[in-house]
Length: 393
Image (cartoon, rainbow, N blue to C red; front, side, top):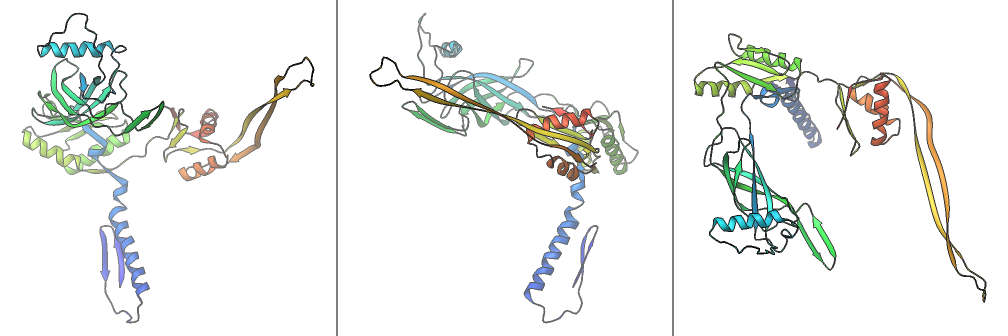
């Protein structure tokens, strides 16, 4: 039996086989067939991206909502009202709304209440009555929101209009306990989520393009990707409906009837294109020491000297004991020993590399930590040996 792998899959040809074929040979051939099939099916897909993953439709977007609310039912882990007067004001206002008028000067001592901020994302085309998740975050000094219930809270948009109402039990992905001055905690206790905790009350009008055109907005600015998206659309649809406006926007002529336009966009988003190689870039996180580079990074031949400077200070106490029956007293002094050591192996020559594996191998020969690479990469960039843009976040 022979297996031939083609562009669109595999084919088999069955001929005479030897009857003495063992189980190991059959297993080996089955494994080869599996590798051939998976390579033929998935090898090319890894090189292509759908337009749906590369771009979004202009105007189709989520809208952020925010609200101020009160969480009740906490087990003594709420805000300390003496330090958070806004919590007391919110409680007083809520009780007045329900017909409970507190005497002037009443000092509320509450432990089971916490003031929170409630945030949510209103999805595009969301209609009144639909549910969405909300995030609840403490804004006072509450120890934990575990077990609390959010009281009915209006969620407003940037225009000040109420678009949803939130209420429900807060879920916390953590736990904590304290006793006798000891405390233990797992994960974060001052923020949680309410699944389907808000009901949409008002819709946001979303227009699928103006007139006969829709606009595709690429997630990143790349003229090559914009050109390939335009070519893929024009190959699929007649009359060349797409043209690139700039390196991030592609204008597409779409049918005017709503149902036809929706079907056109669905078909358009499933088109696959070969993504252009991005610009060479190195991302450096100065806080965590992470260094990430893409496959387009290249280095030129250069020589780098790297050394570590270590300063060690050891301090030991010395006790001076006076002689017996003398008028002296015991004195404790400190003896310090300072040692300065610099490690370095002189210059190391790094060959030119045009592949990511070559770049990583060259940098590893320096024996530098990720934090050391921050300064090394910056120096290589200044010397013109690093062919990439440095971005520090």
